[in-house]
Amino acid sequence: MTQHFISLADIPATELRAILDNAHSRKKARDGWPKGKIDADAPMDGRTLALIFEKSSTRTRFSFDMGMRQLGGTSITATSSDMQLGRGETIEDTAKVLSRFVDGIMLRANSHDTLTALAQNASIPVINGLTDYNHPCQIMADLQTLEERGGDLSDMTLTWVGDGNNVAVSFINAAAKFGYRLRLSCAQGYTVPGQYVEAARAKGADITVEPDPLFACQNTDVVIADTFVSMGDTDADKRLADLMPYQVTDALMSASAKDAIFLHCLPAHRGEEVAASVIDGPNSAVFDEAENRLHAQKAIITWCFDA
Ligand code: CP
Ligand code: NVA
Image 1 (cartoon, rainbow, N blue to C red):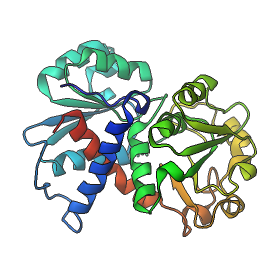
Image 2: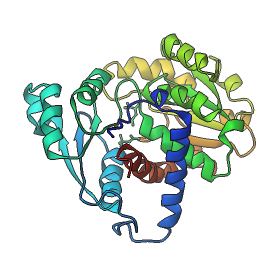
Image 3: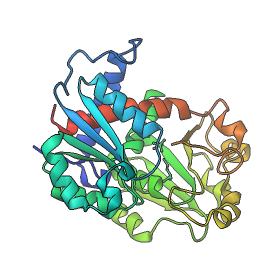
Image 4: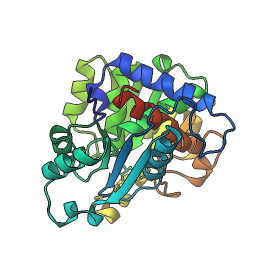
């Protein structure tokens, strides 16, 4: 069966729970192994995943590539500018052609519409490696990170600070699925579109909007930051000026619960969205979070292939 991984809003909570459990057990099973060694069950043996990028990537690119190797499969990486896609070939034709060559496609797309058109025209699983709308693989790794530090997601408060961007949307989409409370503290003009919040609330998500970041962080268990200038944003100077009051500082972390965890999907900009003392400090989980992209994605890949 072809299962796409496009949005956490569209996947049942029980399936997402199973993916996260698989990510934990795959990580544990590899403890201390060389990174290139293949998992004992090699569930992707004989299968190839295409990794296509319309935007830059370090974590997504390397974690998907190594993930496929560890699952016993292979991958082929290309940027859209390497492909005829970059010269105007349609995404629909690209989907139909690649479906004849490879077993699955991961796409990082400028536009979410490109990703959905790919999925609609592919006969193989399609995985979302980030779009302008969301970043679901990232949130699975983030939730894995919180759980492995002992967190019970259904009893946690997570606070998003800064720009209401694509990563924030995936936290919104996952809130009802995992039961965490979510606070959104975004600058005026940078809030998440209200319809995304309302859609999540209609499915049971507990989401609070609190523009004051110091107030929003009171007693929160997790503080989350992301870049103030996402890929594709063209108004960098204005964004930095508008969003600087939302920098995650020691003051925000002090307002949070004792031992609150700091998350950031990376790449980070110290002195912009986060103070160096926070991201390089004792409460930061950002490098475990980055590592977990590998483990979470392996679980996502095997789910897509029912492997
Ligand atoms: N967090 C994340 O998706 O990083 P990359 O842009 O490096 O893939
Ligand atoms: N919001 C960021 C995430 C990068 C991983 C961006 O879209 O550029």
